[in-house]
Structure formats: structure tokens, C-alpha cells
Length: 220
Image 1 (cartoon, rainbow, N blue to C red):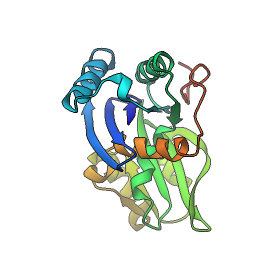
Image 2 (image 1 turned 90 degrees about the vertical axis):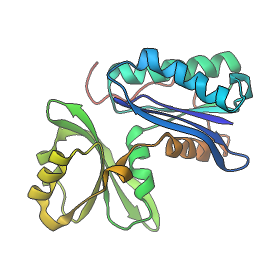
Image 3 (image 1 turned 45 degrees about the horizontal axis):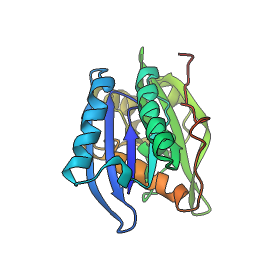
Image 4 (image 1 turned 180 degrees about the vertical axis):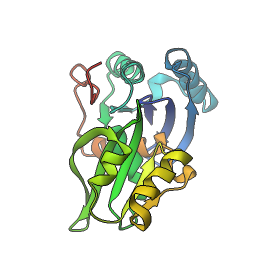
């Protein structure tokens, strides 16, 4: 049984994944007004209780590494590390933008995954298909929407934390070269985080809980 924890931004999420049967027993996403500290643990306990499970029933943990907010990332990683170390469970960290891009990889367009970073800036990750496999292009960046759009040279699918006004600005900048995912398709789901983590854990590839650290694009 895998537990996935995502508190990278104000959109937080949890998922409980039965990797043996290949099914989800619970998944939750919610917007937090920077209250991850008081919201995360009660929701986690409730999800386990609803399935008649305890932390000792877990086989592994997956946590979202960012980029994201300093406080949010610190809280999610602290809870994941605490459980991993106290229960001797394997732990995997997954970049948050990889989770945003994951549900869109069945289509052919390059992907620009976005997270809001405040001050009119976004964290962006770029993904493209190469020889039948998806890869991340370059490093994560912190920039304005206009700066991100001006770097693109081909039609691109935008997904992630994109509000109506942001979508309008993207379309004004790129016209028909921009495809913006619908809000429901852009919702960052902890279920995808769990599946990405399981891809590594199934190969025996886990992170060192003592050394695992968040991804920051600006100094906290």
C-alpha cells in the first residue's frame, strides 16, 4: 500500500494506492489557505481510517518535491520523512511538474506544465516526445507567462495551475499554437504522483530519506 503526499502549492493532495491490485482506495485534492500544517495529518488519518488501515499497513511513501512554496514543501516532506524513518518504509520523491504533465502524455504535442509562483511568475517544466518516450527538456524555470511563451517555437499544450485570465494571456500571445487544458484535466492529482513513485519503487529504486530535499527555484 503506497501513500502519496503533495503539499507543493496551495493545491494539496493525498492518495492511497494498492499497487498489488492496481487500484486506488482513496484520493483527495483540496485548496489550502497556507494551512497545510493543520490540515494534512487529520486528512491523512481519516483516509487510512476509512479503509480500516493504519500507518503500519503501508509499504512505501511518495512525496511531491516541488518546485513550489517553501512552507508547503517543507510540511509534506517532513511528514513523509517522519513516516519513512519511523516505519522503515522506502520513500520516493517526484518533481511536482512531472506530476502535472503525466496525465497528458497520451497526446502528441509538447507539454508546458505550470505552477503559480506569485508576483506574476510561474514555475515551468517543458516535456517532449523523443523516440517514443517522454522526456523533460532542460531545467525547471521561473519566469512570467510572457517570457515562457516567447521561448516556444512550436504548438504546445499548456497544463497546470492556469486560471481563466492566464489562459487568455497565453492564447493572446501564441494564438492557435497554444492548446490550454481544461481545468478538470489540469487538476494536479496525487494519484499520478503515486503511480510515478511506484514506477521507481517497483524497480527497487528509493531515495535516502535523510538526504532527500525539496526543489526550490528561488532561495527560501
